[in-house]
Amino acid sequence: MKILVLGSGAREHAIVHSLHSEMTAQGTPAHEIHAAPGNPGIGEEATLHAIDANSPDAVVALAQELAADLIMIGPEAPLVAGVADATRAAGFPTFGPSAQGARLEGSKAFAKDVMEAANVPTAKPYVCTTLDQVNEAFDDFGAPYVVKDDGLAAGKGVVVTNDRDEALAHARECFENRGEGGQVVIEEYLDGPEVSLFVVSDGKDVRPLAPAQDFKRALNNDEGPNTGGMGAYSPLPWAPEGLVQEVIDTVAQPTIDEMARRGTPFAGILYVGLALTSKGTRVVEFNARFGDPETQVVLARLKTPLSALLLAAANGELAQFPELEWHPQTAVTVVVASEKYPDTPVTGDPITGIADANAIPNVHVLHAGTKIIDDSLVSSGGRVLSVVALGDDLSTTRDLVYQGVDAIGLRGSHHRTDIALKAAHGEI
Image 1 (tube, rainbow, N blue to C red):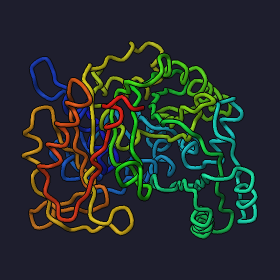
Image 2: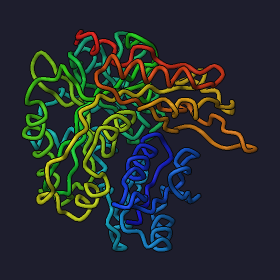
Image 3: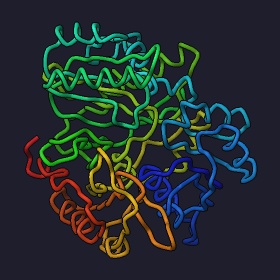
Image 4: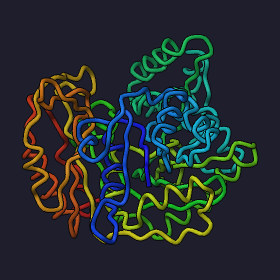
């Protein structure tokens, strides 16, 4: 197939890497892969195109030029911009929801409305348009305070804190950034470990991927500021038996059914963020695309060809699609972040050691915030690389992934050293 992948992060590199690994019976690459705009790492496995991936017209024009057989939309911004609507209207099989479907991520208030209609278990919300309403919600719930920007915020729109002044400052910033009509969602705090589950949907039927757990805080022991994600692992040895089926029955399928009932079928990835609380499984949030960095570990374990799964969903054929197959190994990823990330990331520093890390058996490096300047690879964002390892168990895999991380050279960079540590020690 001729496949066009939109996006430029480690999530998109993981997708391209998975597609690139699919081989024909003769041992040659099974697909011709294109990416827009991509990054230097993606460019080693796909042909890059320097277009605006958020522009429906630009994406359609490129798809027509390529005669693409499948379009895979990675980030949330093109989805909310209606790129999937445009490419479908132009006749291209597209993996990713419509702009209306992407509102499940684009608006926390909309997502809560859908959850309520579908009877999905989630945290009690207050949708606030003024600071007075925010304070009333704080009075009702008490600490810890959970404040969510209603719109897209690149994974950094949520603050969870015991400091009321900090929570109020975040709400104020959200209102100021959104202007007139801005909203924030204040939620009750959910205790218990969190789980990420990706569910593939064709608008009617669903197929779950393997659960994963990510780490949002910048520092060890879940301390420091919130980030886009500093690492992840899969599978989850501590997850309750039957968790995936429970989520399909009580969350994913009812949500997909409710979206179809509203006349806006959701075809793509429904990212279900969960908390396994003392009161039962609860939804923390929905996203409308693969999550980062969980995608890096989930796709590393997927044995079923990713291209076939994406195409079946794009063509509304999941009902006939076989159950997914998985490699038995454990996967762990660790994010190498630039100096001062997430506050004021330092960029433009040379990156070394990627080839050395890739040479370690069962380790590969995915690019996120990188670019080429004067023939040298340099950092260009906060999260720079994702190092991924596969192993027989969590302890072995952790050793491998940190060997890969240690091989990387980037001045001032930092990473967490406790990714999957508690799970490896049986402490969850």
